[in-house]
Length: 113
Length: 266
Figure: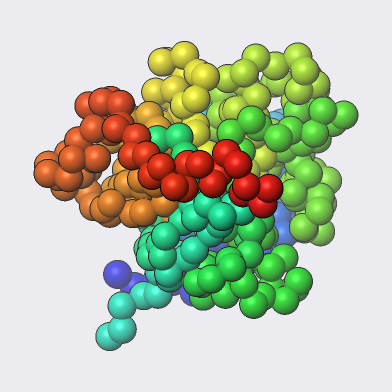
């Protein structure tokens, strides 16, 4: 199984911002993820966090997603997790957050969600 | 390709309390991702072994290595580094009674990280959700039932997402439903957060449900380490006694017995 290097990159889609995460999200760099998610929300458009290439996420990474979701809700914005990998889904399920987040199969669905 | 190094390696570990030898040359290894149950009756040496694995007791003889670090020779800095990577859920909970449940759970994050307050709050409350104590963060430990204390202690043990989790007697004193939920949770922690987990227990049902491998200790000796099926099928008499809850025949050495009763330095 190939493992993606750790990375976070925000890209502008047609009417949304997509934050792509890859690799293993853990305490050593999850604060970077937090900043990227909060920065993306500042644009005021719907935000998706793409997680298909994330092979591990710890609770500090999950905390960054929770904070982003909560902030979007407070401001009436739209926030979703996109293409969630099995590894991420297992952690979400552990805390029953799979029933809290909006989870979409692809970024295109962000506009329809 | 070399096989990955075990997370825990114990070689020829000996432990004594006074003249009584409580561990006899114990060899022991646990690989990453494994759930190992250490099983044995009272006085089998399992708590002493656990204390050595946690670095709470330095070996008089033999070696204990965690993540490749020899705990008998580790510097303070190395020990701290090891401690950041392990979580421990003690049998009695060991919650600090002057702190709320939420403060207890957040304590390792405040001690060992520089995370912002918002992340600390979410991470610690997330772990309370994981152990089904969501919303209980403002209670004091004295307001919790025994089962809730145990779950709060587990939340604190896993708040840093440790690579290695030690769990001492998870089922002791719990009702069967809570006990079964904790067993389920142990399995999910391993799968979702890739933890390696060492559980010390004398509860057979729980051991058989969660273990990948079981180490059976008896009077300071490892009788065997094997899969659940191997342990069940063992023809060792002591193991079968443990599995069938048969009381052991206590061997009496008259000389040693009399010395223990009569000598000043027994």
